[in-house]
Amino acid sequence: MLIENEEFETMMVSINHKLSQDGVDISSRPMIAAIDAMTLLKVSAPLAGVPLEKVSFPITTMNLSSHINLWYKNLYSDKLKIDFTQAKFPFLIHGDVFEVKVPFIIGKALIVSTKKNMGSRQVLNVVDMIHELADSLRLTLTISDENELQALFITCLKASQLMKAIHKNDFINSALKDSFVSCENLLIRPKSPDLSAWHSVQFVEKVLKFFITSKTDKVKKTHKLTGNCSPQ
Image (cartoon, rainbow, N blue to C red; front, top):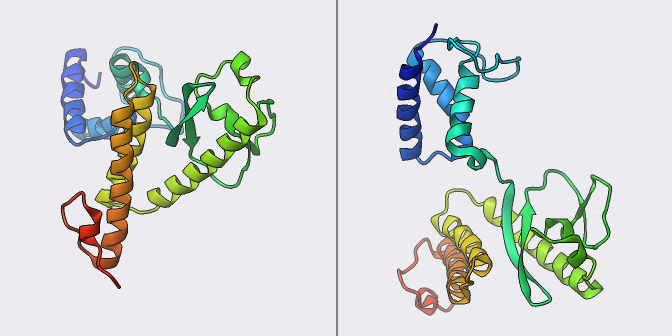
């Protein structure tokens, strides 16, 4: 036996608390916790790449990772799932707001927008990215809806890719968060258009401040952006 059940529970609570304090995403914690547990127990054990033993007792080096994964699954359930959405935006369909998710795209993909179902893996159909769109409502989309959706999707995709390529900038990181919150405020019940508008304005302001600092290396702490600009 590697560790008693009660000792395992105490160790996992301590490890998870530290990961939480360090700001580690929930979805990333099982792997990091397994490494930390091995360090504490001074053992080497498989993480992946080999068949792991299923959860069973006693706890051994061969089932330690399985126990840790189950511990996190029981604690966080669906929060362990990784969301590969890099951006999202609201889209009106017959007056109702729907969420459109923009996924991470690796390599090249043909982006189309059609209410028809596309079978090719090389084609990304933007209509498929509309969250919780019923088939009956999908069939009511017009060509104008499809064209507008595709234009917004491509704009959002390119903007998010450019912004995420800028690493460790407080203005950009905060602006990206504002974009998500702005969208969320149009999807919650009751909706909050005022808060959505506020975060949209904040998004624009922070992107502009990033641009100003990239040219002048400094920016004043003010919402009046004209105070940060000087004629060239």
